[in-house]
Image (cartoon, rainbow, N blue to C red):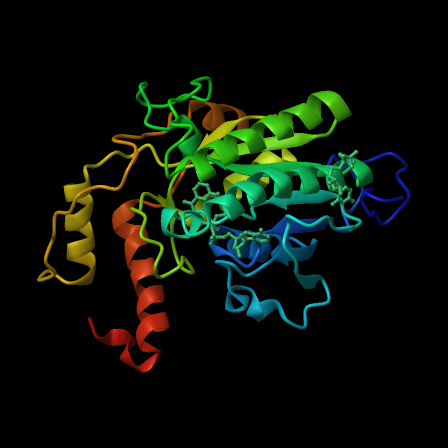
Length: 318
Ligand code: NAD
Ligand code: UDP
């Protein structure tokens, strides 16, 4: 029936990746909302490579068809242009709910739409998960800690968030999305997972993203481990390596052009002063930790940006 896994042999009642020994898994039907975006498109690559069937649901607000274009023609891949603020009917086993602009430049562009995406969009995907009995994973954010008064941040910290600021559409939106997720878990017995992602960078990131880099996109693996594991979360997924913005600017300078000029400008409103994930929980319960150091990861993103801005021929130029 709806929401059950497909197996080579009948396994009545076996669900969600708990595959009995000796049974070959045929692959799950997975929805990735926001799958045309930066993190989502990397996740889609990994799920398809593993043999799952993937449906991407995306309205292309910040996502791009190019991010998943290499899967066109793959019978296990499907792309639906759809806004998660509207209900949708699908038959699936797992839902990775990523749809939401992640960068301040994008989520501040239309704050009311950002809230609707986080609240109504998450409600719709939870409703879908409930109807078909799918497992649901929410990509929440380190922003739920606001401008933290605890350092580093452990998952048990409740945060310090401004409810009426220009970032609130995102921070409070994600906090409500977490609340909804836990209420469906408690009230409808839904299997849920919550990840709190810290700033992530890598190839396919929006060129105008504007956020500071800190954690390489390899953490997609953390999302999959969380989905397949037994723990609800929330789990911090991020890199505990800490550096000042000036230190970061110098690494960027070294990577792109030693003559690039560093400018100092006023900060935006409500920007957290300091943030660093405590990832003890993810290490112990998911066996996950970030593997890519900034100096190794940054050149990969720079190369990707150069290719997209200048085209292949000029790739070699600084
Ligand atoms: P992104 O902007 O690249 O991707 C978001 C995707 O969601 C885009 O493809 C966009 O078109 C789509 N989308 C937005 N609103 C939608 C709507 N109403 N209906 C359907 N699709 C919609 O961002 P990302 O960096 O890939 O982030 C993915 C998720 O991870 C987001 O939920 C974000 O909040 C979370 N997250 C990301 C980071 C990070 O550093 N990248 C940090 C914390 C949390
Ligand atoms: N929903 C959806 N797809 C589904 C099932 C539900 O988009 O397959 C939406 C539904 O339209 C509603 C929301 O999810 O807006 C919450 O659904 P639920 O059944 O939990 O609550 P109710 O419809 O009873 O308010």
